[in-house]
Image (cartoon, rainbow, N blue to C red):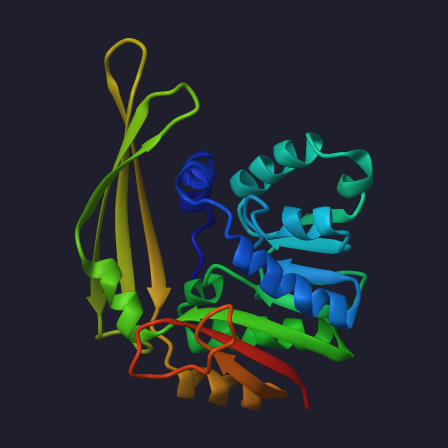
Length: 256
């Protein structure tokens, strides 16, 4: 199950650590232009995809379970031109159980957020909600991480990022997998060590649980829940997914 409290705890670090990816924005803009508005982003977080889409002229809705992440997005939206901000609608909610007053021509789940649904039933619930919010001509795009690439999160990583005050935040990360679970999961542990003005170190701990998903499992799940898989890409250049290459998996699906 998604643990929204953990995301609230680390929301302020998210934009400091992860930069926007222009190639990702172009990827989603291409589909938004082709299909027309509105677009729904599930797991929109701090708005790293949502805000660039709005700047481009796309009417976009964002839904996230974490109020902490949404609050960061709201602060960023306040700084936007009024016309751009008017294209954005934010909602707090769970992708397994949401009801919005719109149907969408494009629904996207970037940043591998779908992995946080750690049971098969949770995944089915999410896809059923998506099915009910997608227009007949609409498309669903889900960003997943291949099992070979996901295992890299098991490695111990220590790095530093800058904070808002010009200081440094030390991040330590390691992971462990659990194949006793069905489906199996990987747990990633992180600590953020941030120096304070009084010389002390503030430590924030965070744990994320993600599910292993193979291409075959996702295709079966989509098909079972009323979708047709059109393509599976391994990057934003739309190169076909190759199970021999550790990469992301970008599923493009429509209603049956």
